[in-house]
Image 1: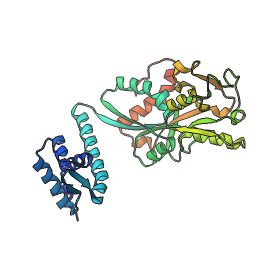
Image 2: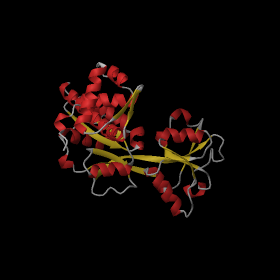
Image 3: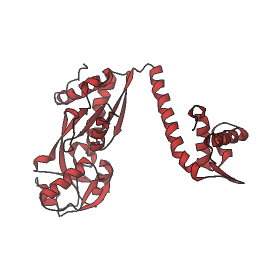
Image 4: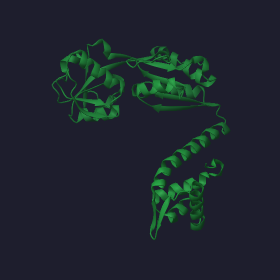
Length: 311
């Protein structure tokens, strides 16, 4: 049985440096230790684990299978310690709390930058932790209470997550300048399925919507290229690799009408709803509840060009 209290994070850092550089000498330099001190730390770590972590060679070191296994664990430990130090540093600097938030790409690109900037200007003592995730990942994280707030698309089942309307976005068909659909009047999605498409990675709510629409039309979706970001989709379409579907407001204004052209869709599902959700509103911290209430009112304020009052 390992005695966890004897593990030294600094020794793990030395181990990771040695693994990265395949050299104890470089690890010692990176950790600002003498070579003998760095070597002693690694030897003591091996003794505590009862495993040989490196094969010592005249010109460096090589990880053993046990060493390879330890690398991932050590990285997670050091990452957790770094996050802990950053969080505690925030409290020491006067920040009151942290709100953990995940949102899908549409919300991150179109709406959240302005909303969070306005909230932060009114509540500078609250630290916001935002990550961009797929909608089904966000709902899962809310259900497991890994995050406080999530923003996700309307076509993904939300289970027992409590949700409120956040924003609407309008999907449009994007085509390159040389495409036959340039300047076309609004079209139905089913009538353009004979073209090659550029889409997001598997699992994204936007791709699921496209696949469901193709299935309803009893046609196949010809995905030629799949990428992981809206900007990458735009670049692929500009290059002539296919056409795509994106929220209108997510496309960089400088390329609409030059590199890309938007064609409106007649399908009712082209107007999407973005939801803001929590696992349980009553279990939110005061800071998370403050942000949640702010974001629920942000849509009305943006429509009327008003400031969003804090609760």
